[in-house]
Every structure is written in structure tokens, then in C-alpha cells.
Amino acid sequence: MSSSPGPFNKTIALVGLSGVGKSSVGRRLALALGMPFRDADAEVEAAAGRPIAEIFAQYGEAAFRDGERRVIARLLADAPHVLATGGGAFVHAETRALIKARAISIWLKADIEVLARRVGRKDNRPLLAGKDPLNTLSAQANDRYPIYAEADIEVETGDTPHQIAVEAILKVLAERAETQS
Image (cartoon, rainbow, N blue to C red; front, top):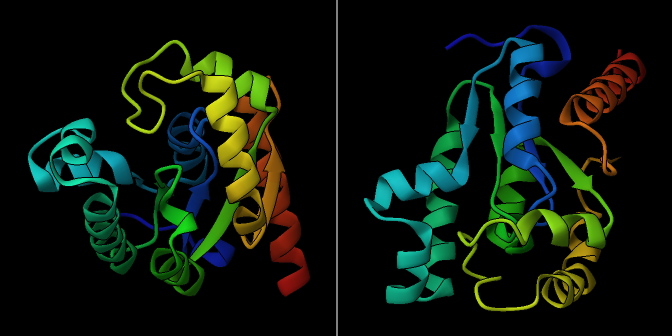
């Protein structure tokens, strides 16, 4: 695994609601930074040997979050990379503490209507399955936004191509690096 020098000697962890683009933006960001990309949801599924929806259905959210925390802890012990977390990962105190201690956390934020439209196209999100995406995401935003606000950096992604979000993140990271040097 390669890691970039300078301000990116820590993992960059993307947090935010479902549909905001943590995985899509994360892949592009990793490429731009020359860092590996890891997706916590994919890593959880690989570790469990089953899809997240099955984990939720069989064991419940609490068991899923515990497994997610362990997987994220393992990933954060690896060489620096860009990490897309699950929408609820940063909400849980232990996982949030791990991310804050070992990574630069970036909250990707977009209008709820945009997110509802995006997640409405897929049925692979257990906390949204069979529910109205707009109502569910609005409720999640009310609960999670105060916690996401603890992230090191906030980036509005809007309803623009993912590359625009990547450029905004790179700009904020460069500004952060300048103030820290």
C-alpha cells in the first residue's frame, strides 16, 4: 500500500448520510491523492461473509454496529487510505472516537431531497428498506447532523458530479495543510 506524504499521512474518513457519495467520492479522492481506497461496508460484508441487509435481519443493528466498529478499528490500524464509512458509523461513540483519534474526518453533506432521490434508486440500505426515503433521511439528519458536525471538516457536495466534491475536499485539505505548517 502506498501512502502520500505531507498532510495526508493519516487516513481520511468520509462520514455522512446514505446517498451522499462517500464511496463514489472516496474512490475518486483516493485516486487523486494516490492513496488506497477502502469501503467499510464492503469490508464488513467480507468479514461477515454476508450482505449487510442479512446481518441486520439476523442479528439486528446493535450487532452490526459492533462488527462495524471492529472492522473500522482494523482498517484505521492500516497504512493511511481513504475510508468510506457507513452512514451510521460516526454516530456511535466508540467508532467516532476511533475515527477522531486515527483519521481526518470529513462530513459530506447534501440536501435531503437530493439524497432521497439517490437512495430511492437502490434497495440495499437496511435502515431505508420499505420506508419513505425523504422522511427517513430527514429523521436521520435531525439525529445525526449534530454528531456529524464533530467531524474535522465539513464539505457541501450539493447535486453536482462527484469530481466537484473531490475538488472541494482537495481544496479544504490543502488549506488545512497550509494552516498546520
